[in-house]
Amino acid sequence: MPSNPQSAFKDNLHETALFNRRLMIAAIVVGILTAVLVTKLFYLQVINQTHYSTLSENNRVNLLPIPPTRGLIHDRNGIVLAQNQPSFTLTLVPEHIPDLDATLEALKQRINLTERDIARFHRYRMQKRRFEGIPLRFRLTDEEVARITVDQYRLPGVEIKAELVRHYPLGELASHAIGYVGRISENELDESQAANYSATSHIGKVGIERYYEEQLHGEVGYQRVETNAQGRILRVLERTLPKPGKNLYLNIDARLQEVAEESFGDENGALVAMDPNNGAVLAFVSLPTYDPGLFVNGIDSKTYRALTTTLSRPLFNRALRGQYPPGSTLKPFLGLASLETEALEPDHELNCKGWYKLKNDKRRYRDWKEEGHGRTDLGKAITESCDVFFYELSFELGIDNIHKYLTRFGLGQRTGIDILGERPGLVPSREWKRRTRNESWYHGETLITGIGQGFMLATPLQLANITATLSQRGQRQTPRMLYAVQDATNNEFTVQESKPREPIEAIEEQHWQTVIQGMEDVIHGTSGTARGISRGMQYKAAGKTGTSQVFGIAQDEEYVEEDVIKKLRDHGLFISFAPLEDPRIAVAVIVENGGSGSSSAAPIARKVMDHYLLNRDERHEPY
Image 1 (cartoon, one colour):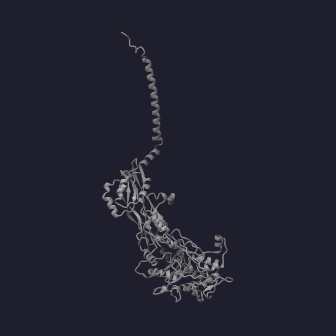
Image 2: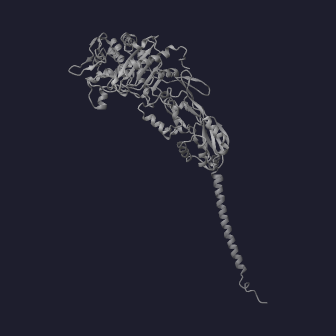
C-alpha cells in the first residue's frame, strides 16, 4: 500500500513539547495576573478597608439639611409685624417631563407666567440635577392652584409645593424699622454661617430683620437619608429637627406708629418717639414708606428702578440716616451751655431789633422776625425763638464750647440704636474744618451754627434722643427697638435691659429749670411759637420749634414761601416731651419742605403725644 505523505512529515514529539511550553507560559501569565488581582484585593479589602468602607457608606447615605422656621416679630402690644405665611410654589421635575416646551406652553394657558419667571427657571435648571424640583412660579393664588390641580394628570413632572414665606401683615407700616428679608446672595454669608444656612434661601437685609438675623433665623436640622446611585432618596434613616428662630417683641407701638404716619398726610419726613425713662423707641417713622413684601421673593427691575429713581426716595431711611440742619431746636441746649459756662449772665438781656452785627463787619445777621423781639432774655429767646439773642450767645460761647456741649448730649455721634446704617450727623469745630477743608474758622460761622444752620447736621433719631436726655435732666439712655425675646420652644421671655449711658453731670438744677420753663412757654405761653397746639391739651408739655433752610438767601433778599417751589422750601422741625412733671414720651419731628415748624411739625407731635398719653383703652405697656 502506498504510504500517507503527511505522516512522513508529522513530528508528534515536537508538537507535544511546543504545546507544553505554551501551556507553561499561559499558566505563568495566569498566575501573575491572579497574584496581581489577589494583591489588589488584599490592598482594598484589608489594608484600606476603613477608607473605602467610609466612601461606600457616604455614597449610600447622605446628610440633608432641614430649614428652621423663622421667628416672628411683634409690636409691644403683641400685634404681629412679620410672620411666616404658607405659600404655594410651582415646581417642575425635568426628568419626568417628556416635552418641556409643550409643558411650559400648557402652563401659560392656565396661570400667569412671565418671561422673567421662565428665564429664572432655566437659570436654576442649569444648577440642579434632572430629578430635582425646580421652582417656576412663587406665591400661586388659590385659583391658580385649583387650575393646575384639576389638570395635573395631564402635566407629568409638574408639582405644587407648600412652603413658609415671610409676610408683613401691616404692609408698609413701620417698614423702615422692621426691614425685610430677601434671597441670599453669595457675598452675604461667611464660612462660619454657611452650614447653618444650608437649607435657607432667605436672609434679613435691612432693619430689625437684619440686625437680629441670628436670633430670628434659628438652627438648621438634618436628616440622614439612603439614596441610590443616581442620588434619589429611598428612605429616611435618622432625623434631627431644626431649632426654630426666636420671636421678637419690639418697643414700637403699632397703633401709635399708624397715627404718626397718618398725621403727615401727603408730606415726607421723619418722626421718632421715645420713652425717655429707658430709651424704648415707641414710633419710628420715615416717609414715604415702601412695601417690604416686594423684596421677599425678588423684586423685578422695573419696580426697583421706580423705587430708587423717584425724587421722594422711599427706600431712604430718613429717621436713621437723614442728616438735616436742626435749626432752632438746638437753642435750649445752647442756652444750657451758656448758663454753665457763664458766657452770659442768667439775667442777661438784649434789645432785639431784628438783626445782629459783628464788630467791624457790615453784614447783618437777620432774625426770622423782621421787626425784632424787643427786650429779650434767655427764657423769652427760647419761647419766641429769637435768633438775635442766640447770635450773641453763640459768639460769646465760641465754637469750641458749642462743640463741647453739643457732643456731650450725643450730637455728632451715633446713638447706638439696634438698627444698622445709622449716620452720625455733624457738630463742626475749628479742628474739623481745618482737617476736612484746610480752612480757618470764622466768627460768622459760629453765629449761624448757634441757630442750627451752616455745617451743623443731626438725624431725627438724635434729636429725639437729646430731647429725652433734656427731659430727664441729663440722664442718658441708648435708644432701643427690642423689648423682649421669646424662645419658640418653651415660650420663655427674656426682657432686654435698658442701656444707660454716661449722664450729663455738673449742670445745676436751676439751669435745667430755666431752659425747660422756656420750652414750656413755647407751647403754653401767650407768645410761644407753638402755642397753637396747646388748645384743648389735657397735659403740660415742653417743646421747641425749628426751621432749617434748604438753600441760602442773599442778605438783601426776602424769603417768600409761596414763591418758592416745594422742594426748595424750608424744613419744619419740632421737639417735645410730656407730661412736663413726669415725662413719658419724647418726640422729634421733621417735615421736609414743610415750612415753619410751628405749622407743619408741631401739630404732628401733638397728635402722637395725645394718642400715647390719653388713650387709656389702648394698651401701651410692653406685652
